[in-house]
Image (tube, rainbow, N blue to C red; front, side, top):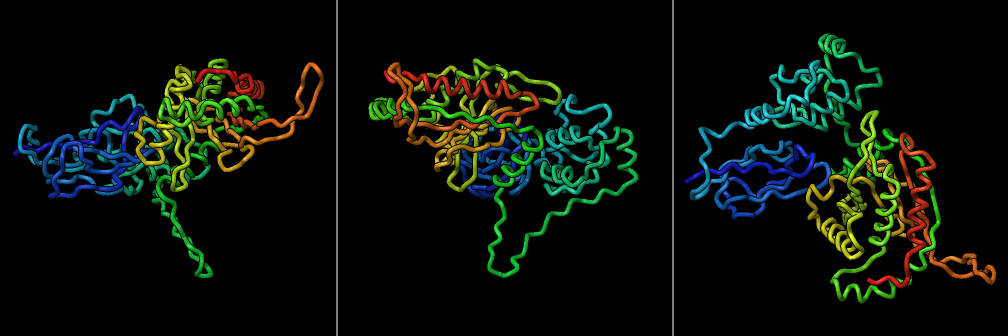
Length: 433
């Protein structure tokens, strides 16, 4: 018999850790190769971790709600042979974590806060947050963690930052002295509200809703939101889609919605205005090379997720339609991978799905803009012709552009959404599908 270490695989670019949400298999269960063993959650999506070998699970090293680093061993599988033996006894989770921690580059640490001086394990994400928020090692060590063996999780440190107060950040040496002289009180979790009349139902937010709430509040606190609105005549687009949608579906096996047409126009406009395809990092602007469009998608449980169409400007309309349909379908089925939600540079959301004419969407950080698509409506409009003006029925919609006024002024924000409108209104009604 041989023993195989099942490790948490790489979950996508910039994803360093995941939370155990459910063990599909338990100790003593047999597992086939590629069969799901455990379900985990990252900042964006839930994922399944399959077994790389067939065998019997003999040990589980982490429990539900534990935070695990990429590359850490999460379970031991006994196989018939061919896999390397696990040396000596199975490493305890805390020891494993310390071993992984030693491989983390020292570039993530600063000279003033040396995390190696601590006997406690802190994940790279926790250390990065501590550095950004000016939290000293003494403060960090004093925090009471809710993770396995008292480890400080991302939620613990974010709760601490939120309740830390609005005091100015002291210099590192001052922080160390203050922290040593002050007993840091652990952050108490807020008790569930009580129904006064005994009839109200108290519902705790699920994990994804809590993350959405945090990201939305953080975005409003980070960016100076400004909106620009423009009305667009999309009559040619509506007529063209009605004419070709059946042919398209029969030929491609895909439905042709309006979304890929709008995404195509946004991608073109981003090429025309590359300073909308940026992000902000402190006092620096990061100009993105690739145009990766996020598309906000509602989930069956009412939550929201933003899968990303990579290199959207390189796709033709057929490719865009397939990408949109694939991501939307997998989002509804909970089959998105972590990489599917990473790397977005600009986001589009369809507020017109349920009849909204326009909206004021919140920017998806660290991007600097988001475009809301309003409902398409038949409206009376003035039509200009060489013979004079007359009133006709047109298909129109509003585009609502929210942008970060720290780096995008009204001129750029207005010109960008105007360019999107121009591309839509100039749509060729005789275009080949």
